[in-house]
Length: 40
Length: 479
Image (cartoon, rainbow over all chains, first blue to last red; front, side, top):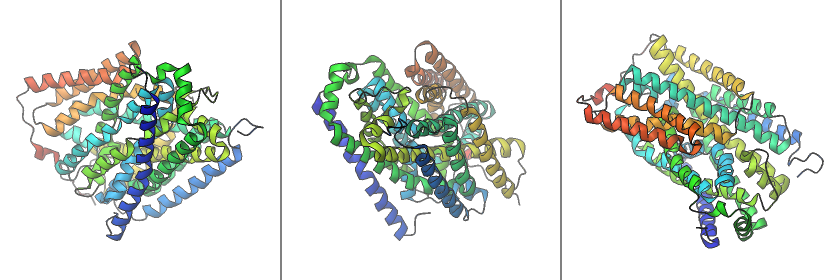
């Protein structure tokens, strides 16, 4: 059973979008911890 | 590609990047290390790491040569299941989240995973566990050191031994100065570099080659790579889940983090780290499917990802690949150096050889351990003994045997030490048998099943009840 183009493309694009969001999440959390002096 | 040399980067540019990164990381490690006053500061960052740094270090440490080099390799060999199966290793981080919270609650003064095994199961299980931990730690350290050398050689033509030596010197340098604090802070920056780099490479590849043409080429010439019923690949999927669980559940890399994070941060940090990590192997893995279309047939399968990126994106792409993989390697290598040196210092030196050692003495010994581990890793990396994937999966037979003894040890009072020791020992032996007789893709699976069966028998026959308070070992302070 072969993975069709639609399924393959969807998988790659969804994963790419999720990965692209990660730096924004990490930077937002860092800013929050930094402002509340909770980094360490 | 550089027409004259056949490499994407010149040797001098490769060396320049290494030196620039090396100086930056070592200076940063030295700067952070000034806050370390005690052994606890050095080994566990004062047990006070906040959510942002905690989540980033969980994610960045799990993104390693495995994700940036081996995920494309396995996609190249096993197709779609290779990358999907690899992403399931995120379950290790996600399922460790509740365990981390419980570890922090049961052992507020603990230092290492070895502490837990010694206090929960006694000496026999501790010996088996330490042997497994040492094999795994060196397997991973050597695979990371080798990956540094392979990467530099493939991208710039620089001799394997120079690249491998350089990455070891840099990581030993900043871990030596800054301890876990430096490891975690550099992990945050490395996490950002890795993710942004991986997204850029994938984006440009899709823009240049297109997903349609990659799919069409693979479907015509290598249809098994798109087959969801590819038997070896399906076996790999399950094997990789157990491998990932075993790696995280037993390794002091993760235990030291659980113990270093602030009060209630451990659970949510591992959960978020796992969720952020989940899509990354698919983004790095699908790149390898473009290799046949581009006429790339790498001499070593673990270089397929960097070679495709360098081919499509030229010199800029090669620089991005170089920085991403170098950051991924450093973020894991530093963690492993710190965690393994903690095991050597705490479990072997302090608890077995010098129980009267002072805090300052332990801090000094911990630094010597980092240096010693670096030298030993360098010696083991000198002969390039195996591909990264083969080396990694060999360790699967060892670590998967620890999953059930760790989980049951944390949540039930009834599993006795001799049964836990037998589960880890026979799980490892039969897992290795599976590795050599059947293939790498069953080693962790066999090991975990055998270990689970023995733990199940232990629970059925045992009448003993462990006292949880025995895990909260009071620290004798020496001046």
